[in-house]
Image (tube, rainbow, N blue to C red; front, side):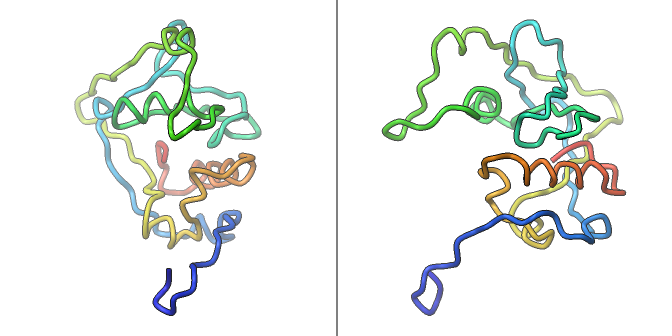
Length: 159
């Protein structure tokens, strides 16, 4: 509720601002060892998909996307839950799908950090977005955000 007692307006995520490439997007530096990936056993890692089907994939399939998490739950959710709905507050994943996964942690390379665009909280709001970026379906608008982040002059490694 707002201070006036009225509910806040519903979010309708828009396309990235036309001036997105000129925005001072906050970066977060992350060591590769801080990230986990859940992937099929035969994917080769790190795997960068170019299908253009998932939330932050490039719809033109010119660059690949690797879905990672800072913890095990997020890593699993990034690859197992994108097409599953909660039932009574829980996600049910077939055991065969779960058992077909590897969990990968990456090694650090001396002097290497990943520069991620901070698309959370105030940083996301300043860029013209909101939390719907991580929840909206279909994925056409989040994919356009991905393209703008990829093309940003700060040369981000990801989100």
